[in-house]
Length: 279
Image (cartoon, rainbow, N blue to C red; front, side, top):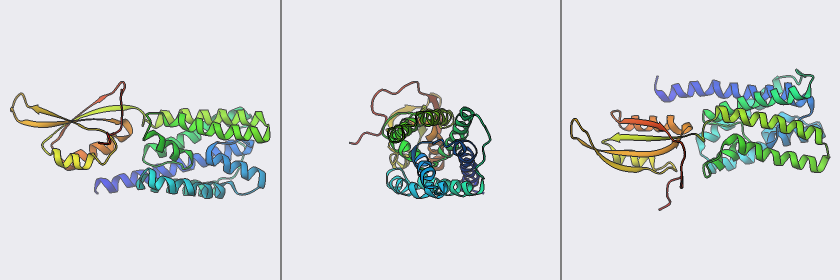
């Protein structure tokens, strides 16, 4: 079995589990207490509470414009997995009954947020998202070095603020914020896109690697090196990537140059433009 097929077989169940956890958090913890998860799912819940509409189908319909935007702004693979997760979440929302697991609204908010955050974090870590503001946050992190979970919390907080403005229901809004905050913290524990690593790649196939790697919006520096034992001259490519991007980088390098030497070190901080220069 080739690596692409193996990765596909691993990703499908992980995305499915993530969608299942999201549906569990909604139907067993948040919806029974009339709480919002924020973002597009929160908007779906708000509309569902007011009109009695099906929250799962509303979740799918409202995600469509964001998924289309992400198709052009983020990348096709990411959005394809996001579409899969959104559809799977919608189906699980139909299958899992709405049932109150925790009578205490605080427990419902906290554990609902933890479960949803775990599901969302899994989908983000393995190359997709649960739709909604996850996609918007992923677009932002490609241009700004910020944690995904905190971006989602800020965006969702804005939705809650709108809810308070129109309904004046502070209790539900604050409990919903507690759930959103819990979800955001768990997402940042699982999704490590904002952790930086520096890769030093010693290779004899510089041009082939640059042709492939420079399609990614990260800079690369070429350093001339010479082996102390063999005195063979080679190029060393230095690039800073996020921890989330490391697997893709390693796969690209080894597929082009199986004999490349890759040294990866953790980066404490980055000063300057993290993206590839435009010139």
